[in-house]
Amino acid sequence: MISDQLKDKVVLVTGATSGMGKAIAETFARHGASLLLSGRDTGRGKSLVASLKPVNDNVVFVPGDLSRAEDNEKLVAEAVTRFGRINLLSLNAGVLGLGAVTELSIASWHRTLDTNLSSIFYLCKYAIPKLLLHNGSSIIINASIAAFRSFPNHPAYCASKAAAVALTKQMALDYGPAIRVNALCPGPVDTPLLQDSAAAFDHPETAVDRARDATLLKRLGQPQDIANLVLFLASEQASWITGATFTIDGGIMNR
Ligand SMILES: NC(=O)c1ccc[n+]([C@@H]2O[C@H](COP(=O)([O-])OP(=O)(O)OC[C@H]3O[C@@H](n4cnc5c(N)ncnc54)[C@H](OP(=O)(O)O)[C@@H]3O)[C@@H](O)[C@H]2O)c1
Image (tube, rainbow, N blue to C red; front, side, top):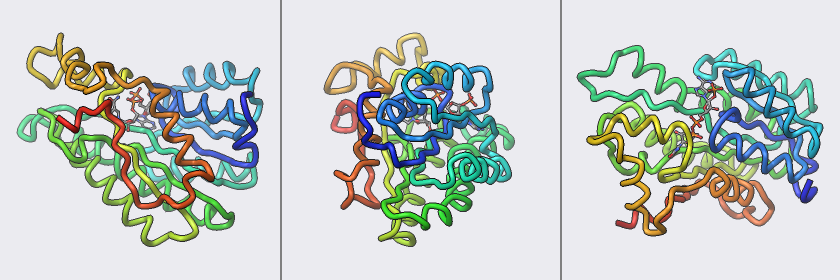
């Protein structure tokens, strides 16, 4: 453990089995939080818990499909059973659902919207009553620059991320001052999801390299870059920040 900055915090992290959610889980574990980690892949979830054990024993994995309301309800109930409270949500579960509108199946549209947007509504619906019981509660939603910029063959993804930003701001209004609600909008971050998104572009084999070169800083984001921002937003240092949207993109939106 590198600090006990979060030792009194119970944090629920979704999308914890991969990419940014995993880096956020590892970072929060190193800062002493009690963690309830979510994902669908039990093998990856359990191996993450095992890898964190030497630094932090208060980490539990609860498998579930967050596109389903009942799995979100179960996650919240499990957090309260295991740790007695919830102080912070870091919501990262997401899928791409690629395909232009005329090609995209109705099932894929719903799966993408349910995972990327409805899951935020479901989890917040069940968790907010618990968050309201404690001072300093906070919700940090992982949206995307796709909320502001269109990408080819990403209609469900772009729509879900724009709505996630709108939902962030709306919840900040309804639940301030008790709960701070903020969104981050990453640019291209080196995760499996970014690699999968290449299929939606012309010349998929060079799409990730082109995204990297389009950043002003000439590198892809690393999951740890995002975890650092989430750690800040979770901290006391961010106590006057709510309803805000943070672009973290190596400058790609500045082109
Ligand atoms: N990578 C980028 O360039 C980028 C840029 C901007 C925003 N984002 C956003 O950042 C977030 C994290 O993405 P990432 O890049 O880290 O992707 P990733 O490595 O593919 O991780 C996605 C995570 O979401 C979980 N997940 C997907 N569907 C789920 C479901 N139905 N129920 C529960 N969990 C589910 C996955 O868990 P299982 O596989 O175990 O189910 C996995 O842990 C996403 O919301 C994504 O849209 C990514």
